[in-house]
Length: 468
Ligand code: SAH
Ligand code: SF4
Ligand code: F3S
Image (cartoon, rainbow, N blue to C red; front, side, top):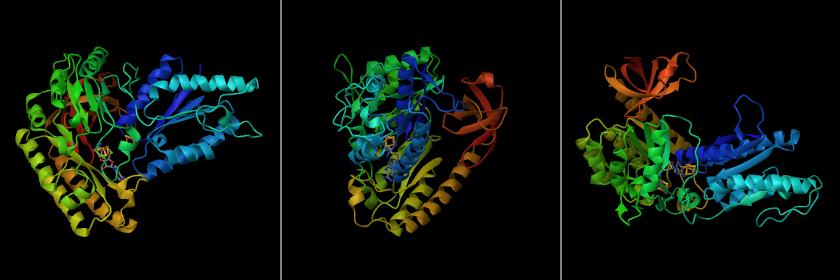
């Protein structure tokens, strides 16, 4: 039996794609290799291209795999994910990384098991020194030493024609699951590569989502996280031709018996409806938590980012959310050093952060992505200035997070237990409805259960508690 290992970079979308890859390979009789089990037969790198350092880490990892190939010519290297949707990347791989065996993109994950089989067939043919079909549009290089190029299987599509349903997924957790509700993005924020790597927005049919969640629940899932780059623009059409928006979907999901929690990622402020805000109050299963990326606090920067909302509009949404659900937890993404960002613009980001008082924030240094409009903007910010602003912002954010978390001490929270802590023996981790991470002592057997935990301590990124 051949073994595989998947290395995943990037967001939940990629994590879930890796679960699907794993599900398909398991179905075909491949076996996941344990971290400790030495070299697997097959490595799959699922890449992300959101910032430059993601690209760099990929090429670093790829470089290391050459050594495995050198000692084991049967070793298989597969690369996929968002980086593969960019011509300049695949050109570089085709030219300079002859030990890569299979290249596929974000739109043909479902073809991967067949592509892998094709590779093994090509190798068998090459070994019998028959002429080989080296894959699509690839000129076979004449090498003295047989390289992967001759047998490589390489297929990328610019976009998907339709959504492929019914792919298996091997979940990381038994009690919770990601569920894609839509694919792609139409927003073209000026800094972002995603619309180029994931294609145009496509929403799944509501019945397909509902039946997937029903079977997940039958399989022990208590919490689902609905995934999309901008879930607020979900536009589903059911088999009777009726149109569903995102909130319709949430209400329908909340009727599923046995499902206890609904979360979603990510919500773009420009399309956040009053109907959704109301659903937070009306729908018990919808968790009191929203990730609402603001990106910048200055309307001028937001405009140049093509975010399609102003500082005022964003603050108004947060005000409405808090008016409807006073204890809702809010997190965000912020980019520091977008081209043309002045110290004054940055001060507005700091002020907005203090005004909203986020529970947590992901802060990023702006990274120019080739092919995006902002990468061509002339007023790029010097690295030193970016870093200096970044440090100030992180300090502000961390202080607020710590204060927010401290306010939980003394409360009792419902926690869905994720399992044993990776480092501390005898400790468990879980999440509150507000997505707060809680560490507490308890038996491993309660993994996957909803339990009450009294919060006894806190720090910047997590809470500590006592099982009740
Ligand atoms: N669809 C989501 C974001 C997905 S990307 C949304 O619109 O909210 C996750 C985060 O990466 C973004 O929110 C943004 O903060 C950050 N990001 C995207 N492109 C970036 C770039 N070029 N440089 C730095 N950060 C970036
Ligand atoms: Fe990127 Fe903007 Fe689409 Fe989010 S909404 S994925 S930031 S283009
Ligand atoms: Fe990265 Fe692609 Fe996600 S670029 S952040 S893996 S959609």
